[in-house]
Length: 291
Image 1: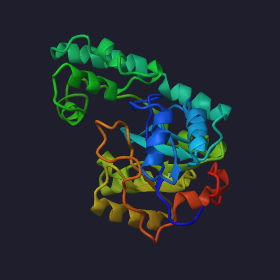
Image 2: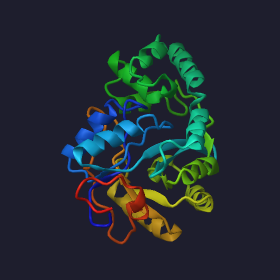
Image 3: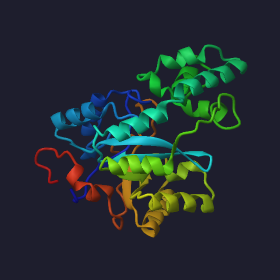
Image 4: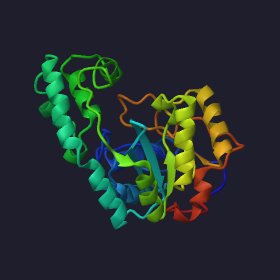
């Protein structure tokens, strides 16, 4: 599948911290003109078969996906995996281990918020959780909006849940090398997700790309919902410098919260190699589309 197409290879369902089911996301992607789609829930592949089946029923080409949380120089970084075997036992085991600390972390977040005068946050956040193993800051943010503490989720993250603010509890995620290895050994391709979000210095960012490449990473998100047009150019240049394929994804979570809808991003720069060219044999093709 090498012709120009509208690919959206980053979004989230209720299986992690989105608000739509895999089936509803497939329908929304199809209605938005997406040609190639991937569901990339956080640290969880439990929605993959549902997503693939829903895509197939709509004639929508599909790649398996996941977004793995890793810790790199003390910062949480996300690595997207694409085109892997959704039944791979080693990948599933690694993701279970990565999810393991979320419950304890959530209790600590709730205790900090209670100390700041916001009681019952853990129970409130649970009302927004589709999978209790994946309770996250996003679920707490939705509860704080519900009870009127903040107007919207961006305000929550400005006032709470981030470093130096009430409710911030760091978590030790997977190692970068382990996450890339799980993806590769399951037959997939590893991608650095939304690199502009991490706030790294130039030296730190160079170290991330260097180590990622060393472990066998092959792609970087260039066009994504949280990047500016200037950042598209920055990471297009980084892709070329490190010999990485380029990915594209909205990072869509919710119709009410996401600033970029499925399929609404501009195309990748034409000078870059799209990740789907490296994954042609892993695409679950839609009827009438070349693979």
